[in-house]
Image (cartoon, rainbow over the protein chains, first blue to last red):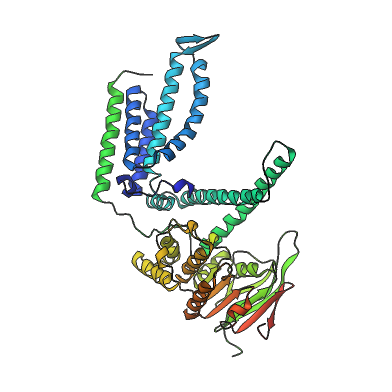
Length: 254
Length: 225
């Protein structure tokens, strides 16, 4: 499925225990959010890139995902540099770009990319099913795990139904243009999509219930916390502490 | 035997969808041990709805349902019967959601509380019998329609149901797959089976009773076609 395209592979991160990966991903995400110095943030980004490199995933898929994240960041770059008060760095016409604004934007860019990359390297390398199972093991409330799992499951359903409906429309000679007919057709497609996805979602749930599903996700290949996982975990924790050390020891503050 | 225990007993079931009137009206149905029933009826006659009502997925407007001798009223009452009555959905895509075929097939056994090794063994045997063992590692949503259907059947059979409800199992299967499908189902040690089909000729050797759904209720047809 769309979001599981990265889950197959043989790298150390693919093979690691999903429970460890979830813990590490949460830890790193929170840590990076609280980092304040440029040195630590740049280090975090380099580390995140290195981890993605280790996964051996295809560059084009990774870049495409990062592109979507950075589209939002571009919007920030258009607004924050001149709207943040501070020492003017340079002047573009009547607009003054402030040093504080640029630093803030750089920090957001670095943090955002580092967090997304950490999560791609750690979480995208597991199947959603394995993650759901791991969350179960980490004693996350079952209702949240189910919410997470079914959101993903039905997102896929939506996508699938959309492709089917769109194909059916194309096959009957529909080509989108800028006219009322196109808008009406899209409205119909959207309406049908919602109704059909709702029905489909319900049937998927029924089928699971019919096979004895009661909220627990059992996994065929069970997780085993191996020495490799422990090494990964301690390695990452040491690096995490190093980040904090860099954070405290430099005074290259924002 | 007149007083044989009914495995599935529906009394005076009525149900309808909004803006469609009643799909089922005062429907009665009795499935007994040894029954092999073909369920016929036009499109939209309510055959699939009937299956969903039997397993408590949809609640009827009125009427009573007894499964395996026990009256089922609330959601909880259906939990146990669902483990013993296997339902094959019309669309296999509704049934398959795991990242690999083998995981999908063992989803049921694991839910039944089996340990992983036994579940795996049982699932593999099911795939083997259906002649699709080679699909084990494949991703279910990338399979062809017919293959999906067989995997969905394997996922139902892996629960070792006593009763099978098959919703148009042969639609979209090539002849050889139909034969294999029917012979596997015939080998199963089942108490009863109901097959919804539009191709009664294909299964006439496998059924001993034919019910036709018409105007919301069931009528027994004495001779198959």
